Image 1 (cartoon, rainbow, N blue to C red):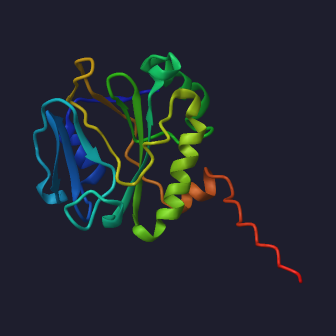
Image 2 (image 1 turned 90 degrees about the vertical axis):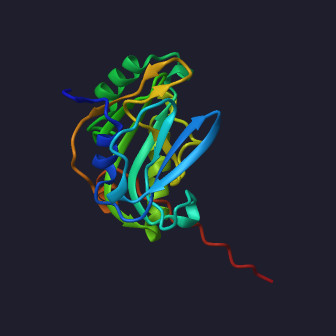
Length: 209
């Protein structure tokens, strides 16, 4: 597959959140964890340093909390492939051979995070009322990729992922992003084309006297 290499965190931010409503969080771990929140109009144009992350969705208040969700804008998965004794290149090869276009659509970005991969699928903005469907899709993605080290603890809507052009201090490697395409799907398209039928709740049996 042909990818466009990106080493520019500001480009990654605008590709994902250029028309966003609400606040986007940019976080950095530098001695201590720090977070700053920006509207799309005021996103930074230069991002450098180590261990820098951005939120995948937006918030109606400048505080990264599930309770403050504004727009759902991405589905994602964090692949700790090293836990499965796989290099990022080996994991990407398996994704290309077995997953993309067959089990899951091709993501918008493949982030080479230093020791693993992160995949992000940008979606047409959905309101917070769509969170149950979003979470169902998120959990399904993680389940399909557990053999590649998908992290089930990194599936919440307030999650942050690493930004391209910054450094992973754990091994000194620069984070890279592979841009695959810019198309966005609706959550309804995910439900129709890529997700299993959500099981209906089992009704409680009537208590007989």
